[in-house]
Amino acid sequence: MKFLYRYIRLTLLLVASAHAMTVFAQKQSNVDSNAVALQFVERLLPEGSYTAAVLGTPRPNASQLAIVEKMKLAIKDNEDWFLEVMKGLEPGQPIPYHKNLGISEAEYAAFMEFSQSVKMDKIGAIALKVIRRDSTLHFEPKDFGDYLKYLVIDLKDHTVMVDSLHLPPKGQITMDAKQTTLVAGPWTGYSWGLEEFRKDGQLIADPDRVDPTKMGEMNIKSIKVVIGKLAHSNQCFLYLKSDIVNKGHVLAKQDIALLLIKE
View: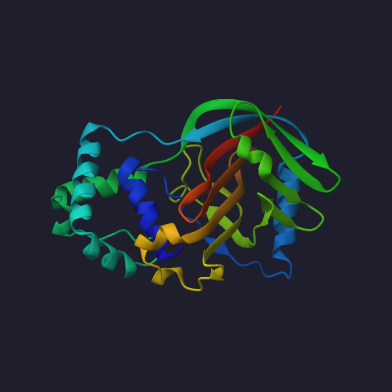
């Protein structure tokens, strides 16, 4: 994940302690690993009606929110320092403790504990249909997640698309009992994603060098799809996250996580 999005992700975490999904991609040895991934999806999601558990994360408690608010104010006062520190972090590496965070070492330890232990659990349920049209899979949710209608999986051409944008395959995911982001337990699956920055029509090759204050001048497409199977059941984990921005104007902002059970 590029610096700009790590910055955005951490900002969101400070606001609401939102979940962060750590993906461990493993390259397949065969020539067309994406074909294997789509065969996995075809077996996991046959056409029909499903009950889908809507997943979400718990809100921080009062003491956790107090720590978050103190950090937000301190980071605002030390923004240059914060951005410089973030530039030096590896993907997934937490920001180390510093007095500029505006909290004590004990509060920092508490923050890291609750921010890293947050997992997604059921907060509701919806009905959903998986429809097959020739070689493509389409999704029709009821009462929630209408954006899923823009997700199309072509089993013949081995493509995954959202908003008619083709998502390159990102590899296989293995989330064991320690790493899983789900209360439901460990899972394995595949991910597809697109991350594209453009300014004045020109593709930005290294978003790490982008000044976050220039966000309003950029066109951004950041989309991720994850489809997996729980280790201890046939439930399907479906995750769709989309951020599409045109020069500061948000065209799409979605974060949908579901557990599907076929009826």
